[in-house]
Length: 109
Image (cartoon, rainbow, N blue to C red; front, side):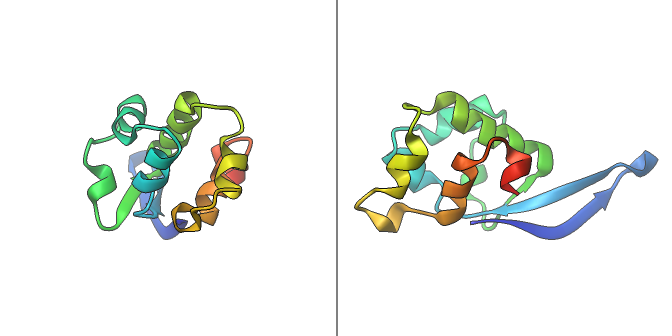
């Protein structure tokens, strides 16, 4: 599940940063569909243990890098279709499917 957690942090100069809470089940579907979660995290330049946090909380730029890394490393173009039609429904997360179907991270949110 992907959810905007409502927190906005104001930085000097008025810039704000949004935070997103990420479904803790991300690691299982990534593995099931042929992605190495550690490779995705390296590609996104995220901490190696971020998927072990409870809750998983990412800044906006981290989240977009994470989604882009998944797209860059996906083993086949029709990954979203494979996820939606999988027999193992327990590995399916609707928000993850929505993210894969989106043209970009901002559209997903």
